[in-house]
Length: 357
Image (cartoon, rainbow, N blue to C red):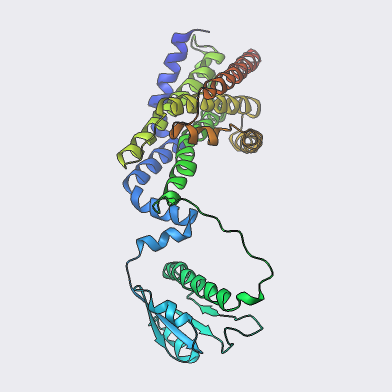
């Protein structure tokens, strides 16, 4: 196999990537997230931890209170961001429908020391972002009320919860868990997944457009054509992964083991690309190949995620510089599996090429 010819095919494919919708959409997605990273960070962090919403809200909300007097009123009075409005239930619900109040709470006339439970009813506007914020704020008030009721009814306890003392992380632990535990691994593996899907398009389009005959009329062999396409897709993985890490750094997120992350992403991406190439060579039709590859990808991920040092865990450890030297051993094992898969692709490509494509 002539490496110069492989390079020429790879160069041709890289310059022609602007016509590939898969990679164009991926680049546009990167640019979009880079432009609106702060906005998306708030939204994604909220999905990961809904209580993070409270920190972004500085508005004072009106709450309609209906029902009997209770210690819950004192809990509301200790809040600066919630204003309580006493009214009957019908008036409160009418005010909620007209958005004059953000929520309505109904407290029954059950005494705090009564035998039965106290059922507090909360009314919110359905499918509303403001309701999500109010829900988090009211959760704290209701938890305070619950603690007061526990103290009032303390003589009924037959067992007591074990107290746990957690260190104070300054309120930012959820943000860092999201960034390093989810966002960085997701962004690093995204280019590998995109490139592995792209190789299927590059190979199957040669069959669908019937351009293989033209390529085979040149001195380039079928195997060199396949490896040229694989090389073009493999180059994109470290470039895109490095771009993600630079964008994260520009947003003030420090990533310690950037070199190790790029190396692991590159080798893992090449493994997925070779797997996609093997599937594309066998099926030679885009829809079937993409379906089978997606199914195989899920199986591979489920198998890999069962390993203690799985790729997601390893990326987190590398990003915070706690991976240790074991990650080099893992890189060596993955590289060995990639070499074996590369040999399989070469043999299969030679077989397909020998049958006339």
